[in-house]
Length: 119
Length: 112
Image (cartoon, rainbow over all chains, first blue to last red; front, side, top):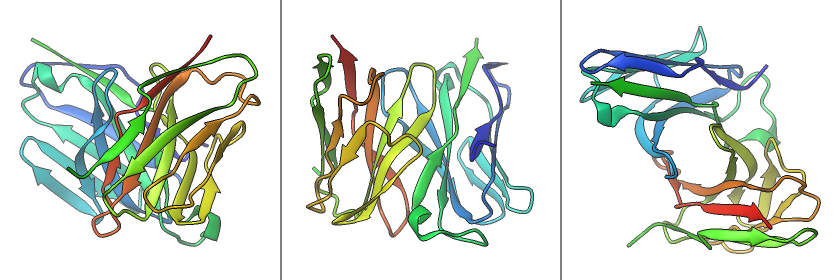
């Protein structure tokens, strides 16, 4: 089982719609969660980070975290063509029931979901 | 300006050759990371370091080596044992106070 898994893409939505991106993680010791956006040939850029259960909103972006179900999602409202990119979910492992000293601080990414917003 | 500097931007490796990718940060971050990205793929963790003189293997460490002799520097060596080194390599450092990850601009490594 992959440590961090994202919903398979590519995802295509019309302009103005809501894009929903999902991510699940396997280790309950994970406590910090991030969403990055990456344009082709560029470095990832941070969009959102979330630590606590519930929703966190920033402009058109909303991150949702459910630790019991071990998933984190990103909603993009009023999607724009400029939102077309690869979205990466990242998880930091800090410890937990299966904590191992050598894994402390390990930051793992999912495989990414390609989003296309068409006019 | 504070940031992470990766060099070179493009690198070519000959068969059987070791090459070293540079990563320097002046953000005073303790943690640093190396990732590999293949076309159309996510980021896979090669090595990471939480503190000077200590580092841990990631998920795909075979054929790579690192050192962390200074807080600012975390060079990655791609050895001849890495049979498929062509990829985009990203270095990152993390701010312990808010845990955000900052990326360098990447190095594209190709085999001649």
